Image (cartoon, rainbow, N blue to C red):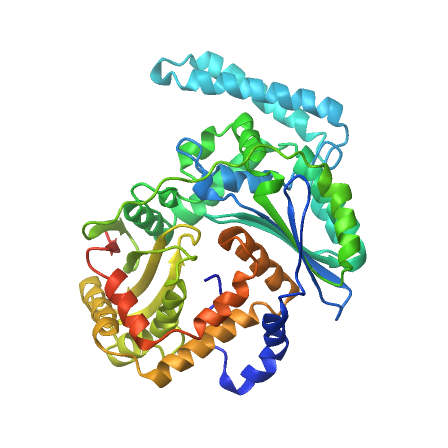
Length: 495
């Protein structure tokens, strides 16, 4: 379940949740769903407390939709989507597009020559690279930097951003209500007319991002190796940012093909929550988003991760503090057991009274940090339940892993106290309902439920499902999934 599991203090719980409880109880009949002829779905919810709106576009394509040789392309597409269109971000597109085409041609020559390896003509390569640099400088003369973002910000937009996960790419912003038409006009323009300007510059930016977050990071490297070990078939095993060699060799043609394949109306959901008049929103959507060509149905991911048949282990050596990761294959977010994993995660690691913190950090003093993640690295497809630990010196990784295993065994053999379980369930429910209280939070939950569950009404069903969890559900799920045979272990060890 896509929720932020955070501890909410009981003393203020009722006051904080009154608005959001009302939302959860009244979505039916208040959410307006409208599908355009081209297949784009709109989800609208009126809130007139303030003259603002939250706008969100959910594209049902993330890094799991990358393919070998093009890993990182979903993430790079998100970056390029902010570079403007044929009318925004350029001083003279007719001249610019000629230079961009030449730039791509020269890059193709560099790529072909480089593929020859040791037999490559170094003199030719040097000439091509010089041409490439000069064309890059020429193309830069036509660029109006951050043009799209500046238009949004100058019109009162806040929180303009985007994110790429394994399952989706999302674009979101909050705006004054009277700027809705401007937003729709801008979004329709970039969905139809995105120009991959500064492509090679942005590719270098992403390479540096990878270097900092993964290649030069012990934890980043550990997580990347861990996921690659846990998933041997499903594309969840790909690094979200992409392999370095793939990033360096992605082409403009490949990126635009990805864009045309997945950024189609039927593969997107738009949510607008706030001070709106639904009939007017639909009229504007028909005017602007209705122009988007229907396109072909986006391809589905059909690879299923085979059942794990034994424990897997990996060790990463680094001049760094030790770290341990445990991962257990588990079903997707749409499975009936999903919410049980949220309860288990909350029970094990949420706050100082949680089982792992109390037993391993405070009492046994084996760890400086323990945590769990209910679903990682994705949610739409079968994923992992993850446990994280950092040993407290002089204790070792062996000791901490054994202690973590022992705590997980307790879930299987020792029934949870009903009062303790109810407290956890109340907090999980409260955190989820609270996530609906803001315009942006509700927009996020609506689009997620619509694309992943197939129906935004799944929000209310999930709230009801939380209340049905019993102690035997926790034991059953722990015994079914949290087993040695189903476990992947990663250690970060000091060189």
